[in-house]
Amino acid sequence: MNALSVCAKMVVTKMEIIVTILITIVLTKYLISPLINGVVSDTKKQTLYRAGSFLALFILLLIFLTTDNEVKLTPEQKQNNINILLTKIESTPKADYHQLSFNYEELLKLDPNNKAFKKEFKHYNDIVELESECGSIIFTDVKNQSKFPDTFESIGIKQYWLVNDTIRVRMNYKANNAFGVPIRGTALYECKYNNDVIEYKRLEFR
Image 1 (cartoon, rainbow, N blue to C red):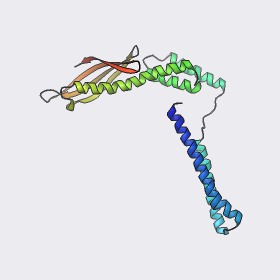
Image 2: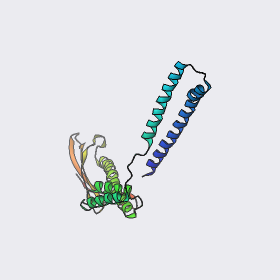
Image 3: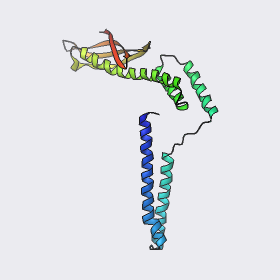
Image 4: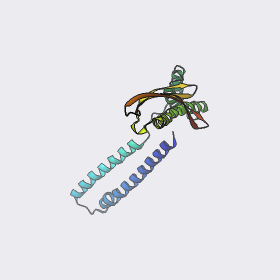
């Protein structure tokens, strides 16, 4: 579970506590106390009872929605699920880094302290993030390389592929030439990490 998920869960828990306290105060002041002291009429009692029932149902619904309803697996079930995922990983090509990242993330949910799973998840997740960052970098660089950047239009990323942990990306684009005529072009780049810094190289630009 990442830091954002933990913080979100803490906020939900705190909100649940605050809402429960507020509802308890309201029930005590406007329902329980008047009934005990006998200062309300029968008609008003019925109204208060209905309001109390509604609030009680609301509290139960709130608790149900904010409670972790995840089914707890036995150690045997966890291990069986781990084995299934490991089998899937063995048959998944290394180039399918999206799927591998997902599979290792699922393994970490089952065994959060497994160092090997953590290492592999980081490896493939870094490649997924590299792909995303590389696409943005290339878009900016291709636009800047155009003779008339204001006319630049990306036709889209044609292909991503992995070569020894290096992402190669081909982009098709359209921009005006010196005569104002839109022409199509293609660019090929590769991106890789170097000490957590993304390096990119222009392999082809035409």
